[in-house]
Image (cartoon, rainbow, N blue to C red; front, side, top):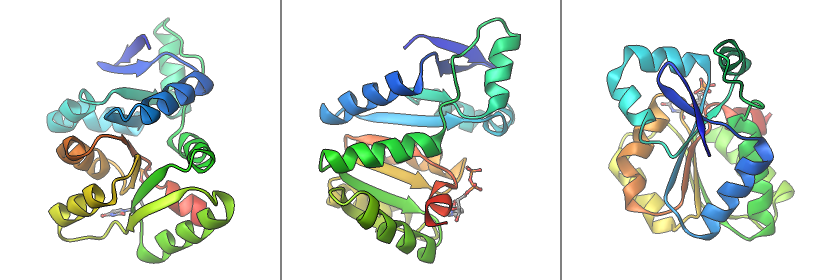
Length: 192
Ligand code: UDP
């Protein structure tokens, strides 16, 4: 995708549909991919935290998650077609993953929330393989990374909020090829 830069952060200039179809291809080809869905809050944080800014620049795809990013692009004269949110992309990938019998690892949220999410997915995405699930209040980060590797997931969704989820992905994505994506508070929304 070509990109539009806002505060030095390059956003992909594409639609939800085209992005999803690219991610599906990437997953089927076992590519190592790092997705960040960035809202204005993330942009502000990155501006003040160079280590987080560096992590953002390691992402393969940064999407405009938030109307503020779309408005910013418009004002700069380089409009982006539409919002691409972490939540919508997650739901789409889970549905597609079920159709394709893909393996997922879910990391993040409180234990009860995560349990709810797993139960919901068994109903709504019956052919999805939940290769592993770990709540976001772990103490041994390296052990969690080992757990992910052992589960051999195709897609790893990390819902521990920013910046934690992006730091985790940048540190451990090389351990296994697949789609790594930070999804913030999405598990709480799915759990309802
Ligand atoms: N969370 C977690 N581990 C932590 C801190 C937070 O798993 O150490 C979870 C929290 O339970 C919630 C999510 O991360 O489900 C954070 O959601 P929030 O909406 O604050 O994240 P954002 O969308 O702003 O990145």
